[in-house]
Length: 398
Image (cartoon, rainbow, N blue to C red; front, side, top):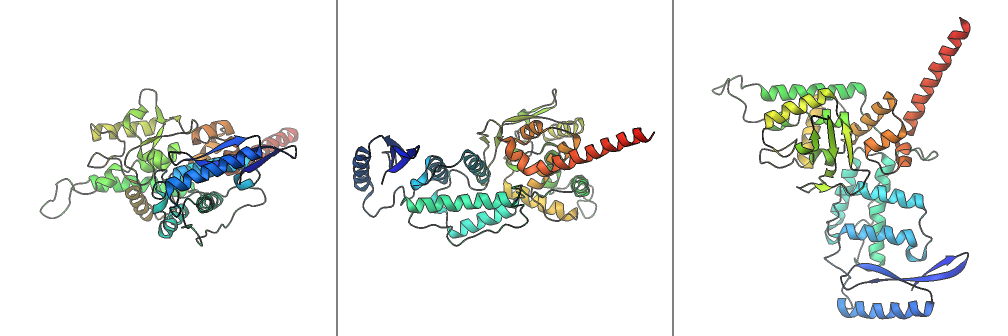
């Protein structure tokens, strides 16, 4: 049935959703219900003729990217006769959409999303380091989009049915997101041990017939030791780190351009689509010097962190190194996103305002940044206010 949209309590137009010749879902608006019904009848007849009576629409062709885009678009204007999403709900959906892209690439075929794949996705999200409300919201979006695909007869069954994810330690009253980050002591231990592992991998063989010779193994520890330094000092996402190329670093200006990322299971970088995600970060002199030294040692390479075969490191290889590094540093397990939260906390501690923090983090909406880090601003402002009052009282006493 056509979806009826009302204005001031009265019918204003009818929307008919249908699939065009390319198999993509689209819509058409009518001012008269009779015309909408007639068009819908014709569209259904054409679909039945082209797809077959029992053939699921787009079976084997639909990608998750197309599915989630359709789900969000339809929800914004009123999915299945429901009220349109509020602007805040739509923004949150877009944020969740950008998060899930790092774990579920747009090119993934919906037919490949088995219950096993959904459970693996859930595990990856839980280990990602994102705040728990964010993880739950993202996972719920995936489930809702797949359920919508079933309703629209795009897929015969929902592969996420019965697979749930629980949320703990969320501040439901204030709407704030609980974040997890490394402490200063943990961060220092990680940095120190990354350098230590590098030094051991560089040191020549001590015993045996190869004593005094350079080590043949240990390339990963030698090559990735700067990873925690870059993550802690720039707050970039792991996909942005993997895609970082030398020509994105301007050593003369001391700047790093972030405009591409490597999503999970992909080999080549893709452009960062959002304008907010494309940003330029200022690097410290210490990090610049370390990167310059690495560039001279690596020679003619494309990626800052490159394998022996000339490719960018993939997510799994980086994750293994990170897990080993945290174990050596005696730091409880923490995902890469905890580095990002640590970076944000240091910026706030240094006195930056919300606009600068939002820009450096690559967030599209300052409201989202405030939901995640607002309590840190409050803590800082409270300390500063108390210090100011203390000084005033001291002056009065004198």
